[in-house]
Every structure is written in C-alpha cells, then in structure tokens.
Length: 312
Length: 325
Picture 1: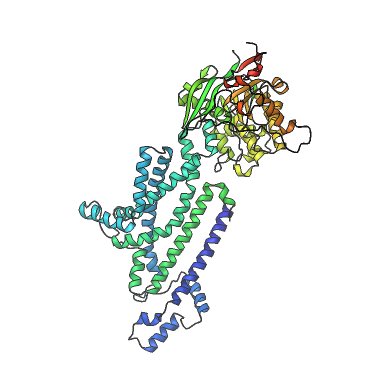
Picture 2: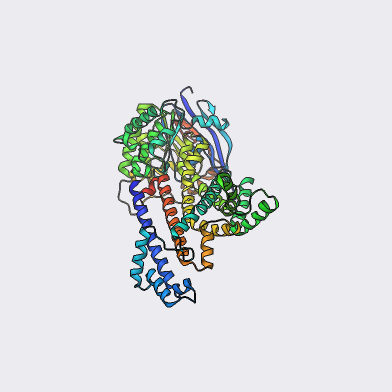
C-alpha cells in the first residue's frame, strides 16, 4: 500500500510538471508584449526595459522556464502587477473558499447519490426505482449555472431562507452562505452518481460471490452494504476524482452568481484586467488540485480494492 | 424413513419468461440419507442448478414452484419463512459453488469472509479466527494463520476451491451441496479435491449432494446416483447398478460418451445425436424419445419412474416387462 502510494504520487508529480510546463509555454505563446500590456501604452522605454529584465523576459525561453521552476520551488508565483502583492499570497487567500465549496458540494451529492443508487438497485423496477431514475436524469440535465440562478431567486430572494451573496463571517455564517452554492453545484452530481451506483450495484449483485454470501446466511443488509457496495463504489470514486476538474469549473459559475470570493472569481477578475501572473498562479493551483484529487481517488480505490494495489 | 435427511418429493419448478413458462424441473423425486453421498449427473441445462438453488431457495425472481415439496429433516423448505430459511443456509445446509475464481468476495480478505460466515457463533473474534485457520489447515492450505490476511486473488484456483470447501464445512453441516466443484479445475487438482472431500466426509459425517457431469468422479465418490435429463429424473439407484446395468437408454448413451470409458482409439468421439428439447415447448410423451434409437409407439406416453429392484429406478417403457410393479 505504501509502495503504491509512493508510486502514485510520483506519477502525480510527473503529470503536474508536464501540465505546468505546457501551461507556461502556452502563456508565452500568446501574442502581444506582456510588459506593454502591464505598463500601458504611456510607459517610458526605460521602465519597460526594467520590467522586462525583472520578469526575465529578455532571456531565452528555456532559461525562463528554469527561473519559473526555481521560483515555484520557493513558493513564489510572481508579483501582482497592480497591487504589488505576492501572487501566492492572493491565491492562497482565495483557495479555502473554493475548496470548501467543492468539498461540501461533493460530500452532500455523493452521500445522497450513493444512497439513492443503492436503494434503487436493491429494489429494481419498482416505483421507487423509476421515480429515482426520473429525478436523477432531470438532475443530471440541469446545468449548474441555471440551478444557481434559480435557487438564488427562489431560496434567497423570494423565500429569504439563505443569504444571497458573499462568504459570511464565523463558522455558522460561512456554513449558511455555503448552502445555496453547494446545492447548485452538487445537484447534477446527485443524479449522475445515483445512476452510476445503481448500474454498478446491479452488476455486482449478479456476481457469484454475492450468491455465496447469501448461501452462508449472511444477512441481506450486510450483503448489500459491505459485500456489494464496497465493489460498486469503486467507479464512483474514480469519477469523483476526475470530476474535481468539472467541479472547479462549475465553482466559477457559483462564485460569480453568488458573488463569493474564490479561485473562480479571482481568475475571471484577473482575465478581464489582464492580470496574467494571477491567472497563471490560479490555473497552476487548480491543476495541482486536480492532479492531487485524481491521485487521491486512485489511493482510495487501492485501499478499497486489494486487486488495484498491484497496478502501476 | 428415520435416517432420511433430504427428500425431494414430486418437485416441479418453472421459470416465467417472455416465451412462456420454462419447465425447468418436472416431477423430481429422490432422497438423501444421513451421511450418504448422492451424485446428480446430466448434461448442461438438465436442471441441476435449478435443483440446488431450489433446495437453498436462492432462486431467481422469475422462479415459480408449481408443485412438490423439499423436505429437510421432515420440514418442507418451500413453506419456511425467509428468516427461518436463512438460519439453515450455511448452518445445516452448505454449498460449494462451481467456479472457485468467482466464489469469494474479491475485496475482503479470506479471514474476514471466514469470520463473517461464523455470524451465528457466540465465540470471540480470536476464537473465530483460530477456527478459520484450523479449517484452512484441514483442507491442506499451508501456513493458514498468515494466509487468512490474504485476498482471494492471491490464491490459486485449486486453493480457492479448497477454501470454499473449508468455509462450507466450518459449521459442520448435515448436508453439503457440491455444485460441480471440480469442473473449473484441471485433472490433477480434481483428484486432490475429490480425495479431500472423501476424507472430510468421513471426518464430519455429513451427507453430500454432488453434482457433476463427470461420470468418473461420480463413480469414484458417490453411493447413489440420480441421472437427470431435460428437467426430469430418468434413472436413479446405487452407483454399481447404474454403471454396470443401466436401464435407461439415456444413461447407457451417457456412459458410452464418457471419454474415460472409451477403450479404443476412435476417429470420432461418440455423441448423442439430436438436441435437448425446448423446455418452454415440451413435446408430449417420453422426453428422450426424439434422440432415442430404441423408441417405440408406446413412448408417446410419459413413462413413470418405476422401481425395478431395491435401489434402482428408471423411467423407460423398455423395462416394463421386468418391472416389479
């Protein structure tokens, strides 16, 4: 298990390096002189030359890359052009908001989706199964930004159950502000996970080892919850791990609609003001988040399924 | 009758399908006495699996019990409430399934699974574990204590089947059902498993219902044999009787087709021409009539399973001059 974890995170690091290098090169390939954009059209040539040297833009591209990685090792993602503050500091200030949003969304939707799917699989082709199917499919079909706008309108404006905008203060305030955005992002995942668990569960319930467990008189609840669900859950873990990328992009919608601070809002704001160091920093952190979450998903799978431990 | 353990009495089972009722078992009757090994032999699709899942009542949802009883120690299992039935499974009646590669849960350790099936025992976890290790030792798994922590995929097929046997015998059941336990294994392993089963049967003194299409294994292991064809019993009796003096043409052909029985080098292996009849659309009369080269006009009527002598029954009109009735 330890060996598997080491190897898996080694692979994650490799993926991260490739992704970050590609991103670095892509940003450099964008036409236009970054210095001119940053300083504006009325900057003096001396000022331009100084900034170019500071950002090492006069160096060959491989040297720029080395400098970039050198800074990255020290946790330095560059300097915000407008405020002069460290990008690392700005990004890490926003990161917890997004992280909480994503984690709470996936937690409630996975819990509900797994329960619904397992229940539907245990009672196939009954009325409850059909109702669950209809609800699931309509949940999947609802885009996060539509759900976000509608829930804002209904629960925050009309019913006034939850606050409409911001991140809130204190634990309960933050939690209260989290409800609507987490609902909006998680809703389609409930349906998706429920369908996935149902299909996977039905397949596992048909396997011979389930018949063996029953033939030994093990009670049906344990057969479903331990013998079948532990296997049926494996594809769900993988999907959630990969789904972190989608969640990050739906978080952008939710953060804009609910005017929440967070990585998504930071990226959008920085793109409109062409604040490239911040865009770069945020994207880099998001990439890191994605790579780590897929590695974690593999690790959880390996913990659940001994057969997966020998892979890689 | 006091030493009868299991009685199958005129059991008929259908599967409801879109094509109509599939008559999987028709009028099956036989019994198993305490400590006896009874073999069931027949080709694929003859209803062997339906029979054992009916005994354990682990049937598919479209199964319909049309008539008959399955009496275990005098109690009709088909009438038992599910809770009572579950108390029997893995306690009084155990089963070893066909495919050892699929029979264990792949994500739980062998030890965990062997602990789980002792759910009725009041013993402590350590005691249950010791019992599991002892059973693994009894079926010849070396270093059982350490191997309890391993997962099914870390064992070979032969070992997994021996583990399945260990699990089935752990509760010291009165009846062990073995559903083609050696079919998925190669010949040398088959001999090992059979020998192990024989030893364990002596030790635990349980009755075994042994299902196989391998006649050699049946002859080696069993006291009595039930020959099934297309969902019906065509012949039953003592092993010596059946193999030396088969009274049903199907049994005779089955023995002729057994590769272990063929002495001369043949270009073409013998087969039984024709196909098993469609169980959803049964022809009238004797079910073997279409494939039987001895069929007569009388075969349009269904022959009864008649007693020919003590411990030998067959369902064929050809025996009716010598039949004792």
